[in-house]
Structures are given as structure tokens and as C-alpha cells.
Length: 332
Image 1 (cartoon, helix red, strand yellow):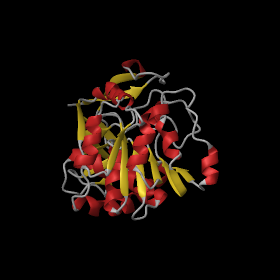
Image 2: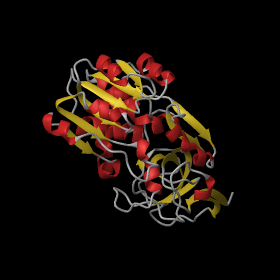
Image 3: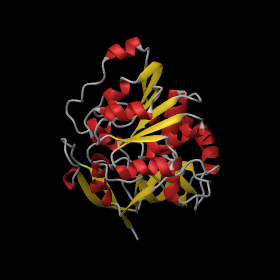
Image 4: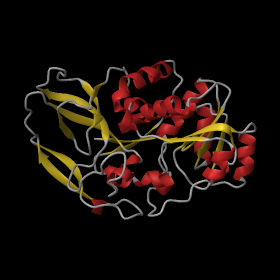
């Protein structure tokens, strides 16, 4: 084989669903490998909500947008097939930003060797961006304390499900916000959350009162949406809000209005946003923090697997509809 498939971003989304008009599926020549370079055959590719921001024209963000004509950005896991780099050998499993393509030529920067004895799907579901994001956001930003109450939105998603399980392992009461009864049942019955709230159901404020009778100390925000205001109304004095994502606003030209600052003042609430590119240099220590929980069986996950590189295009829309169940991964 002398060619491989890649997908380039050629147009910015204008709101609404993602479709094939935004992308160009191309065939590329397998590149030659220069000194201190490696060629990686990507086996599994991660789809993440952050991709909506990466496709936007916004240059005033935490990371530059994908340039039109470039391979769409994504993380993945694969195997080194050719190495002219002293730090990598043929057969090494590596994980990192590889893009929407079957092969990736790299100088090794940003790629981490994978040594955990777990399948590729599990590595991407737990040890890649979802787990790293959960650890950074929960422990280094949220600073949870045993006995506190945490609420996490997008609780059945790849990040939220790990956040909730880590918090349970640390002795917190954990409430998850999800978009279906099936997801509510899964996080309570399988993952051990104390309570779940379907944001599409009725009497949300009453449900919050029941689920968090002592108020909320820590709010891990992944989605935004109207329930955000009800949650803010129940945050305790000196509570903390970790803003990881706002998927409900990613397609909106004008973001929804946020909660009133009056509560921030009256309850002395700390709010902090974070993004993982600021913390890629901390990956080894984040993995060191996460690994014992995984090896002790305290972190469960499920994978929503799509087949073939081009399935990524329609697959992104699953984030907006909530139809994905677990970590969204493309098998190449």
C-alpha cells in the first residue's frame, strides 16, 4: 500500500448539524521518514466535543482553530511502523494528537508511549483526554473534599462519568445530570453515583433539592443549558465551579446568558475554566494520579464505536443529539 486516507477541514460550520460539505476526503502518499521522525499507523481515533471549537473561526481561544485545508485535529492511538527516532521503536504503541488520518508522520513531540495492558479502546476511553481532563479538572481545579456534594453535567459522557467515579472514590456525594433515563440508570446502577437527574424531565428544581439536600459544594460543568441556573441557586457558600465544557452553546452564534453574579458575590463562589492544552506538560503526573483508580477497578467506562474514518463526520452530531453512549471512538 502506497497511499492512505485523510480528511481535511475545508469550510467552517455555520451552526446546525455537521455535514460532509465541511470536509474533503483525500488520498495521500505514504511519506518517507526522515531522521528523528516516526510513522504511526493510527488504529483508533477519538471524537471529542472540543472539535466544535477547533473548527470555528475564533482565533481568540485557548488553541488556534484548524486551518482550512489542514487535516482535522483529533487524538488517537496507534502503532509505530517506521522509526528513525532514538526514543521510539517499531511496534511501540503511542497516543497523542494524530488527526483524521490513517497514518501520522511525527517527530515524537506530543506522543506518549502506552504501556498499560489494556485494549486500545480502553486506553482512549480512560487514559487519553477524558481521563486526563477529569483528573485535572476535579483534583487540580475543583479540589474536592470528603463529605462534599458534587454535581456533574454530561455525567454519562466520557469526562463526566470519570469525574463522578473519581469523586465517589474520594468520599463525595455525587449527582449526575444526563439526557435520558437509560443514562440515569447506568450512572447510578453501574457507576455508583448517588443520584441522577434527566434534564429533559419535569420539576428539575425539586429533583435537585432531593438529590442534593445539603446543597452543592462542587459543580463540574460540561454542557450548559437551563439547568445550570438551577444548580447555581443551590451552590453553598464558598462553593467551586469547574467549567470544562458548554456543549449546548457550541452551535449558538450568541451564547446563552449565564447565572447571575449576585449568587457569586453572596455565596463567595469560585469559578474557573480550564482547557487541557495548558496542561499537556503535566500528562505524566496526571496519569500517575489516575492509574491507581483504574487498576483498583474503581473506574468503569463504555465505548461507542464507529467504523471507518469517514464515520467521524456524521459521528460528531451525536454529541449534539446526546445519542452517543459512552466514549465516542472511530475504529480505522
